[in-house]
Image (tube, rainbow, N blue to C red):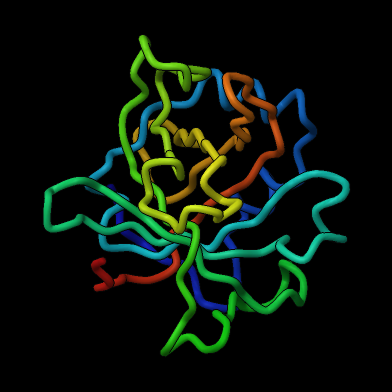
Length: 187
């Protein structure tokens, strides 16, 4: 883990290059990607960008994910909404960077080959169904798989999101995560 950050207003060249890839190339990266280190995620916020042709027109092209270790020892995480002003601008948390709104909590685990959520056995699974979200929270159906973009490096991650509808898992999109800043949040 290099634990580097890019300036608040910029993404790395590798982030921009990966964000421009087509679906086939993203799937190749996903299949070949390595399992990120859970310890490299914990204690950090990550700037996130949803990918694909409709992402720029959605109310959530940009977002922030944070990771922490719960008192129980489990790795967990959350999402933070950001100002939607395009990926060339800084990731600014809403309502503010000093007091962000956290929602969409998830649990981080290695993928269990015997579970229903086992699309990418070499990925980490961000399971919103185990994130202690409110009963009717729509995020409870999300299941994200994340892998390293570059072998041995945990600063840029590729994710693929699915939505659980009963036993079915529906792919809903791709996203990138890049290390943003340290976080001391614990729930």
